[in-house]
Image (cartoon, rainbow, N blue to C red; front, top):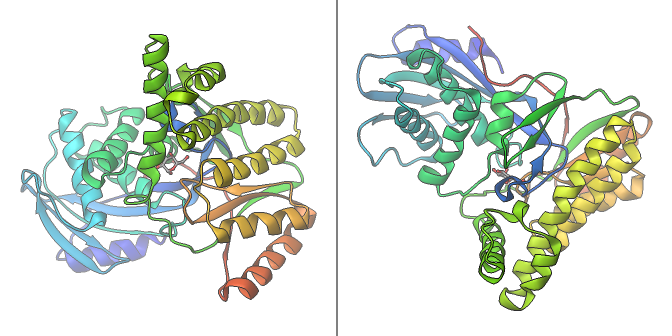
Length: 385
Ligand code: GLA
C-alpha cells in the first residue's frame, strides 16, 4: 500500500489536515478451516497486503469516512444506533461502537482508507479493515489499553452484530497478531497461541485466486456453523454433557447421535473433527521438516471441504486438480470457501510450471485468467506514521 497516496487523499478531503496512519494485514491460513468457531485449532499468518487508514480525531461525535478504493464518502454519528448502510462503513462504525463497549472514550474522527487485499478472495479484507480501525481507535482514544486479543474480538463482534456473519476469531486474530516470517497456531478454545517460523527450504506458498467472488455474509457460512451447533446440542441432550463446541465432543458421541441429527449435519461435524487433528499433524510434520505430510494433509482438507463440508465450487475443485496433476505438494481451498483462492505448497523447482499451467488451463476452461498471488508472511496491525 502506498502511504503517500492515502496521505494525499486524506489531505484533499479534509482541508489539508494530517492525521496518524495505521495498517493492518489480510491473512492466509495453512490449515485448520471452519475449526475456529468449533473451538479447534487454526494455523494462519498475516500477509503483506492489507488496509491502510489515515485517522484524525475531529472533536465531534461524527465519523467522516472516505473509501479511496470505492470513491465513496459517508458521515455517521457514533451515537446513532442505525449506523451507515454500506458495509465498508459499517465495519468502521461497528468497531467504534464495540470499542466503546470496552470503555474506550471514542470520539468522532476523519478518515481516508485504502487496501490491496483482493476483495472476496478469502484473504480477509474485512478483518484487515476492522483490525486497522480497532488499532487506530485504541491508539488515538484508548491509551493502547485494549489488548490485542480484545481488539480481535471487537472485529469479530462487528461481523456478528453489524454484518450478520457469525464468523470465528481466526481472521481478526491473525491480522492483529501477525509477525513477518511467522505463522501462528491458535487454540481457539483457550486463546493460547504459538508462533511458528515459516521459512520452508525448497518450497513456497502461492495463492491462485479463482476470482469467483466469495461473499460470506449472506452465504451459507452461517448454516455450516448451525450444523455444528445442532450436533453439539444433540450430544449434550443425549449424554447430559455440557459441551460448548465440537472440540469438547468425541467421534463416538457424534456417531451416537446419528439418529438425532440430519445426515448433512453429521457429515459436517465429522469433517470438523478430522480438521482439528490435521492441524496438529501438520504442526508436528513441520517441526520435522516433513513437507510431504503437510501437503498431503492440505489435500485431505480440500477433499473434506469440497465433499463433506460443501464449501467449494467448480473452479476451486478444478484448480485443486490442476495442482495435483502438476505434482504440487499440497493444495486446498483457503478461508471460508464458496469462491476465492486455493493455497498451494509448491516445490521451488516446480513453481513456474505450476503457475503457468494453472493460468493456462483455467483460462482455457473459464475464459478468464486466475490471479497468482505469491505469499509473503508480513506484520500485524501497526502504526505507520
Ligand atoms: C472465514 C471466517 C473465519 C473462519 C474461516 C474458515 O474466513 O471469517 O472465522 O471460520 O472462514 O476457516
